[in-house]
Length: 461
Image (cartoon, rainbow, N blue to C red; front, top):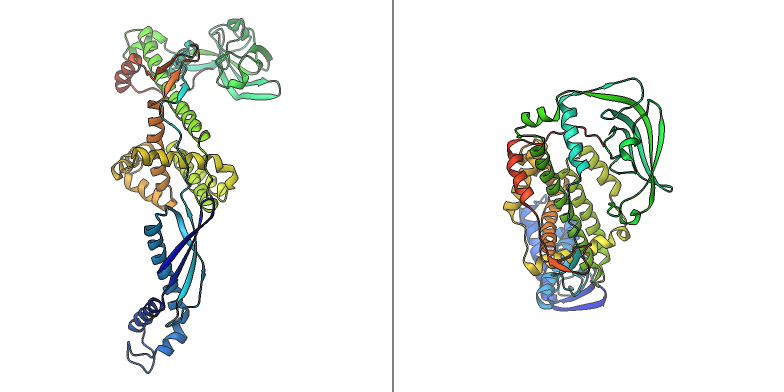
């Protein structure tokens, strides 16, 4: 066969092949011969029906089958001869009528992997602040442990220090509501309100009674999680539902009960856990910033049809993440139903990152093995309380198995970008340094955590 490949631009490729007459005749003969072996017509012995009878009854089926067979062979030869890196399936655009002793021209349309140059992705210069465990975070976990063991009883009158109030809480910056919570638990006299520290914080909640409202003005700190709001004026809005008093074991008693020498030792254990969690969150945020930086420097033209298919795959990948987080199956199904056919324009940036990720994975030879798949399935099965076989079967059924594979591969690429980056301490003046993760506290925490898992309980804000 004589095959030519035209490049109309972008990722599209037009494949044209002229199939010789003898090949067409041979394929048609094979098709009718196979049909003749399988079907018996009245008045004819099996395999002895005349060709004209077969053509009248099965002509369309045989032609369609031969057409597809020829297209498959053309694609294979085109890939071998022209080193095409195909994306997805190839579409048959035009095929002449198939007749004995007559050549035919096939025209196919394909999309190929976008051609682009990867920018330098190792040694990226990124900011990485030093994480720290705030005292109010440690205190909240201590109080949470107390809430799990004791009781909160409503009391009459105005609130006093060491008591608690349950209130609806809302934090606003101008017209922007940045936090809200119904029936949040706040400790009176602690010094923090809804994770923020206003002036004279220890006094702000003293003297409040049921149904009281209060507004507390403050300036958001320079390290506030949303960079665009740092240093801006905010207002904490409170509506008190009830005043409460704690009745239960003391922190000293609980420290002993949990296997710690004293409250200070317990606090240090919590500090280590908080640091470990924050380091993990910072790792993920840093990885996303690194990938975004590489993608922003990469110029490419995305294939339209493949982009549409890839958009659907990315939705499946997100569904897998939801499963990882323990979300109910009904919510995952609703998410999939709602996002089917999501516009490609909405995911262009995600697609670009996916191609960059894939390119880095291929360049670094990062692959996901079947052993890693099975290990991840087993881990998830333990999390959701099901057998690995059940989870694996569900992933196969709803199509999220491919999402798992992509997620694991993406994790390897992101980890590589993070580990190879150079970091700038936001507090330093342009000084770069190699990544340095904790962590005496983290190691210390791991040993304690094995001995005593953390309680899941309500914590005061």
